[in-house]
Image (cartoon, rainbow, N blue to C red; front, side, top):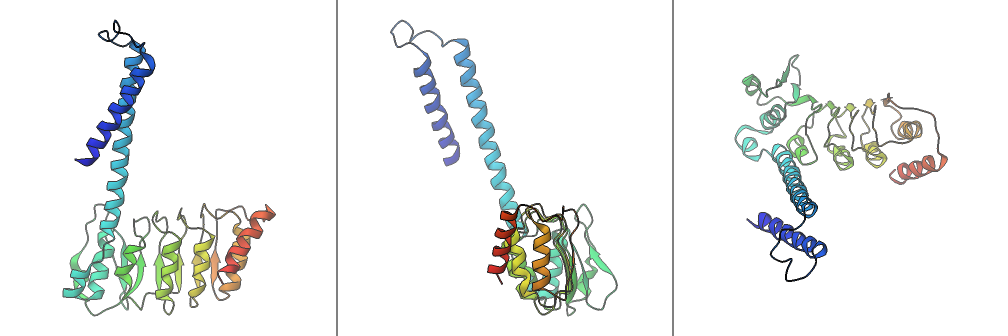
Length: 257
């Protein structure tokens, strides 16, 4: 109830101010309706704040939904073990995975439906994970923490993957060999610097990261930090321009080393 009351109080306060500003203050005018343009302005003001409130609620509900989907599956882990808990989490986010030593992938379809045959591999660790275009985020990494055999991880087009997320990938530093972070809109140079901890990384796809302004220089510095890693970076203008920006990103990356 507190949010609607706050909205009504704000609306009536603004309405009163508009009436005071536009109506002449006399006893003869108090009983008459305000002019048409004043009433129209009041109506539009009300509609504006209605829409503003709805958009705010929508944003909060969306954020709450993302956090709920990335919640830690502690109950499932306690009763079924970490491997099945991780598998169930991935499938609920409409991702896919492959168990170590198994040729087949388990994936959810567009409607979120999946086969429950993954329950037959309770003691088998997960080796490959594909979370492309899901709302997988920093909090959701808690569900993968026990997967010490994780070899490949695809985060292509994940809108919630950011620099904090990349900084937590050090938990897979002894196993992760391939990482795809292409088309992630929130990743910056600072997040890429955190990948220095992944000493076993052999392949990195960092294509089309919109917040990387000097990709050519970033690639050179990443190759210095990860000399054994093959880096793929398409979708950029690789010319090294804007010397000020180059120097700034170079200092940023080197400061993280």
